[in-house]
Image (cartoon, rainbow, N blue to C red; front, side, top):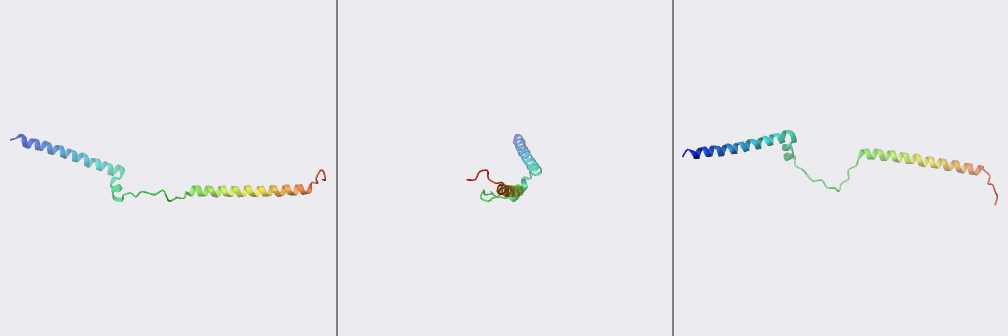
Length: 95
């Protein structure tokens, strides 16, 4: 008759040990990985439909646009100089 309570005590000790391990695991996860916040706030899947603008890319695109405008202005300036030079220089042979 004495073996039955001892077996129950060992069985209960095993369950308490498992519960202690589980509580320690949750404590560790809460401290290091904020698992309690993950459960509280949940997560919503994000669709890929929406485009998010990149501010760095926008600034770089403005720089590229400014450089292209300077290149076009330089081309126009050289074209005007070329036309002015061609109008001053007489043709070599008259046809």
